[in-house]
Length: 158
Image 1 (cartoon, rainbow, N blue to C red):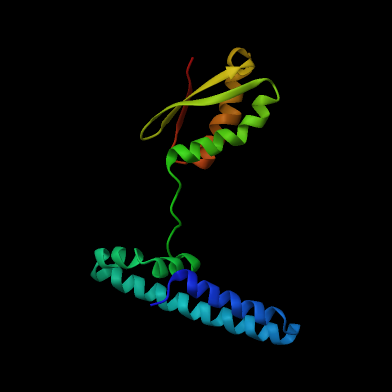
Image 2 (image 1 turned 180 degrees about the vertical axis):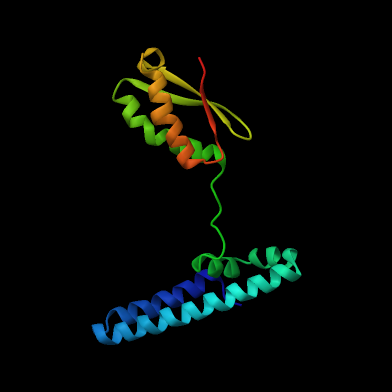
C-alpha cells in the first residue's frame, strides 16, 4: 500500500515531465487532470453524503487514514485542523507587536478564560499611554478576533 508521500512524489514526477511539453500539449494534460479531479470530487462528495447517513463513526474512522484525509483536504471536503487557540492568539499578538514596539510598547498574553475571553497586559509605553484603550480595541482586539473568532472579549489587565 502506497503512502501519501509516495503518491505525491509520483504526481510531482508527472508534473515535471508535463512542464517540459509545449503549451498546447500541456494545456490538454492540465485539462484532463482538472476534469478527472472534478469527477473525483463529485464522487467523493456523494460518497461522503451517503456514508454520513449510514454511519458517522465509519466516516470519522476513514478520515483518520492519511491518504483519505489528504485527498479529501485537497478537494476541500474536510477542513484543515486549526492550530491550538493559544498558538493562534500568539500569532495575532505577533502581528500587532511591530506597531507597539515602534512606540516602545508591547503586549503579552496573561490568560485565556474559555470559552470566549482573553486577558492581555500592555507593557512598556503602551501600559501608561492615554491611547491604550484605542490600541486595545482597534488593534489588539480586532486582530485576536480575526485569528480566533470564538474569542468575543479581550480584556486588558494591570
